[in-house]
Length: 459
Image (tube, rainbow, N blue to C red; front, side, top):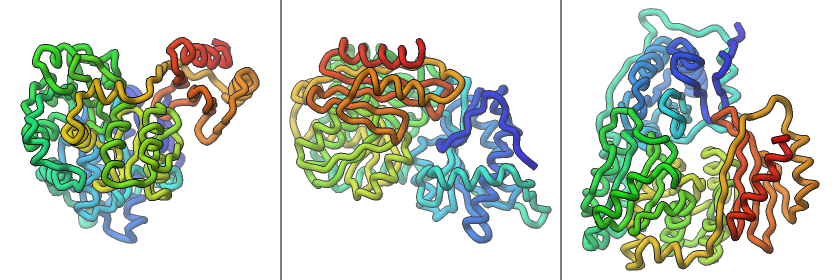
């Protein structure tokens, strides 16, 4: 029978998400988990094993139980890793040789949201083709098993410890040199999953940690996205403690934002730029990011003489392009760093370690490193997505702005290489909105591009 998607439920290559108790209910979650389980069994050609993790949202335990029951009910064995960062759960997929994984997390969405992120045996989120195959099982009868065909559940409480240990063994990381610096770090984890891993990683790196919102109870004290305007409390803590750097995560700790030693949030795009600079000091190779990422990452690649590529927005799109190009580092300008030496997924823990390595290697402060990079102003805005096709708006914008470079792989990207300006105009895959992101040498120029995008939508 055909599955009817409830109004307000967002189904995309990123998984399925919605407001808890409205579009996202235990029965909806169980239906998707059962379809995923059936897909995993089909891929395995028999018995399948699925890793299950979650972030700290208050709805997480309830929805995780629904997921686990559905997976067991279709005959999958379940390995529960509990409350851990998303990258920790995805690493556990490969560690256990599992057929796939599910992480119950809505990442940067507000607290009333939750979601299922679906992963393959590679410990990477499903790509577009895999997601389409999985969704095909939604329109089939659920293959519930009888009493003698049910899956089994086991618990793995060592996933966070293994994740930290793997980071400490990175070839780019001089653990002793970082320890000798005895960095003071202000850490803010929004009462999310990063509180499970980052304190122990920073302790292993010899840091003096001043924590904020480290209780992983899911009661977010700020808006979940770790963008500059949401990090005022962390900035105050940096100034109060004299910290060398402030680190902030989103609820599932796959994104990291930085506050410099003066208490200034420097913008989440710099996380990937700084991580790329340290990796490229040790190993030259391609760098991949998405179309919405600041040119500071492209500049880091250019300064190192490394090839640079842009992919569609979405972690899996960047990760797949990284695999094709043999990239040594990549990620997204939202603070998501992907280091293939660990895995092909965004990882705030990896990002934190690489930033500390850069500070140890250069002997510079965060503000000095940023000041040595070309300066850009970036403006990010969004509007409710209007009904109908966005193509007419794209065409109007192209005609009005006359850019030197046009890219249609993900909405509309317009670039002007001679001035360093660009505009990305695209529908969100995680919220019912249209995103407009522009960058230019001045904020006024960037804002004018965003204003043009609004006009093209009729706003």
